[in-house]
Image (cartoon, rainbow, N blue to C red; front, side, top):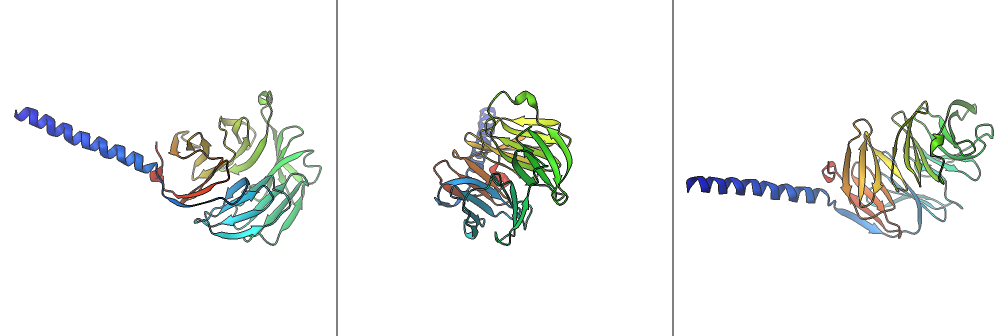
Length: 276
C-alpha cells in the first residue's frame, strides 16, 4: 500500500511537470498584440537598428513608425523603390531600378543625397544595397553577377557570378543584403541564396517569404504559419508560431506582421516566444 502511494505521488508530480511545461510552451508562442491597423496596400517593409519599422506603399508613399505604431516620418514618392535599407542608422538607403539611382536620406526621410549608377558598372542593375564599409553591392541582371563597387570612383572592386545551374526557372529577385561578411539574395521563386564575399554559394533556403531579416546571428524568414530563426553558424533553427503573413519584421522588442490583405499587427517579442 505504501509502495502504491509512493508511485501515485511520483506520477502526480511528473504529470504536473508535464502540464506546466505544456502550458509554458503554449504561452511562449502567444506574444501580446500591441496594435492592429490597415494603412493601405503595402509593397515592401524594413526595420532599422533602433526598432523603427518602415512601410512602403504601392502608391510610392513611405512611412516610418516607432515600435508602437506611431508615425514618425513619411516620404511621398511617385513610385515604390526596388529596395529600401534603413539598417545603417541614421541613414536610409533607397534604390530605384527604373532610373538606376540610389538615394540616401537622413532618419527623418529628408535631405536626400542622390547617387546615379554609372552604366559601366552594370548593364541591367536590378538591385543595389549598401555594405558595412560604405561601398555598394549591385546585382546585374544582364549576366547575373554581383559586383562590389566604390560609388565615389565607380570602380568595381570585386565581382562574381551567381550559380548558373539554378537558371532553369523564372527568377524574381526582390532583396539584396550584406550581413556578417555574407551576401544574401532573395529570389521570390527559389528562396534565399547565401554567398560568401568571394562568390561561393554557402546555402540556399527554400521559402516563399517576401522578405527576410537578421536577429543577432540568426537569419529570420517566414514559412507557413511560423517565423524561422536560422543560426548562421550552428545552422540550428528556432521558430515562432504566427498567423499567415506576407511580411515579417523582428526587433529586440517587437514582431511586425503584414498580411496579404494589408492588415498590420505589432506584437511584443522576446526570446521566450521562440521554440527550439
